Length: 111
Length: 114
Image (cartoon, rainbow over all chains, first blue to last red; front, side, top):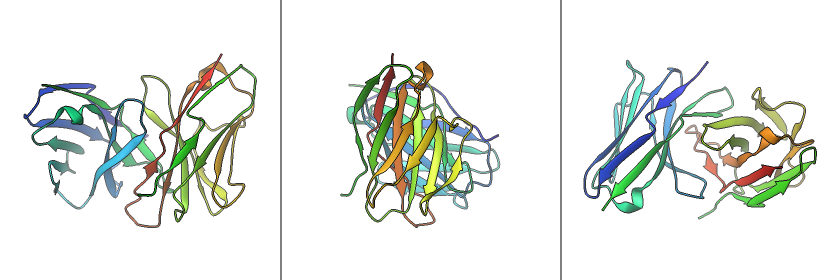
């Protein structure tokens, strides 16, 4: 079945770039998503990429998609302490649009 | 900005009791979902709901679970007889008609079964 894998932890210094990686299995997913979860909060949709695109840039966020390798990454430029959160990669898992999530990558930003 | 709301934020219940988790999706959305996240594990899909009926459900969504949209605004998840392993964070989500399937999540209800 569909599966999404991510590394569990990433630690960076404030001002550096962060790169969070994800691999997925369902190549038919038309969109892929990045969600952010701050402590005690729900899942916030950060950005998404259409499967026909290789790259999408949105202010400090850059999403790269390698369809051949089924690899998705999220780059956060000039990472701030407010970026500390868990980041989830997700693909569409069913015909009704339900999402399949990875376990999430906990990003820690050190001042 | 419109948002999905959920109540209660935390529910504690005894094993075997029934619980109802409530959600108010974004008002012009048509697709509704429940997910759960057991502590330290992945966010898992439970059920999707469209046009007043279940459109898809996962293996987790067994006969103990049911969903309802009793009026034009609320969307509820009922667990008939809770088990210890039902303890989790339950998230409601809704999406509109855009092909991008942008799902907006509520803040979640933490369910603790004792």
